[in-house]
Amino acid sequence: MSKLIVAMHVSLDGFVAGPHGEMDWIALDDALFDFVGTLTAAASAALYGRTTFEMMHSYWPTAAANPDASRHDVVHSTWYNAVTKYVLSDSMTEAVPGVEIVRGDALAASIGEIKQRESGNIVIFGSPGAVHSLMRERLIDELHLFVNPVLVTGSARPATSNAVAIHAATPARVTVMISGSCVSGRE
Figure 1 (tube, rainbow, N blue to C red):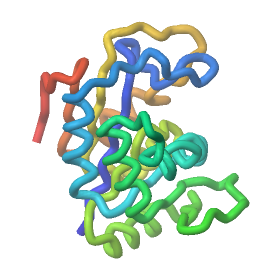
Figure 2 (cartoon, rainbow, N blue to C red):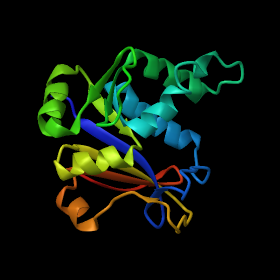
Figure 3 (tube, rainbow, N blue to C red):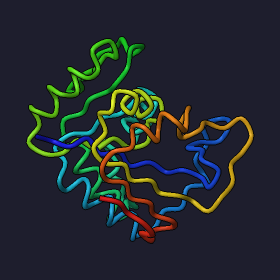
Figure 4 (cartoon, rainbow, N blue to C red):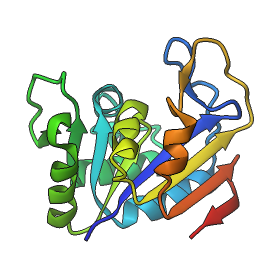
């Protein structure tokens, strides 16, 4: 059975985006790209929340064609175009070719069916609202947090809405990376 694997950037104070959704504080480097490459190499599907999907879908389908594309852009764009895409959303109404919408009313059953159907793992990047829903249902198998050495504060978007719920729903494997260096992991 496929695993549902979360990969998410967070600030030191636990935020995933600034007050207006900005993510310009996220540190990216080759070590991080290589680690994410190990996750995507074993994945046959991507799952996103609606907002993150819209952001990803506006960039990744054509990123490899950009003459200035980095090695990472080419590799990730190729992966993005090849995998099955799912969007967890109750508000998305417009169909996107090749994308399956997953509704929240039968989340556990839907994710269970997807895990059975997929030949590889399912990776979810960012998508804090979707991750909250998946954690509440205890559907996440691995959680990889990329902690950025910055304080975002203010009215930013938190990584979790309830620390107690996160503790109770922690998957069996958690990895924490700070600026591209793996500093702790639990299996």
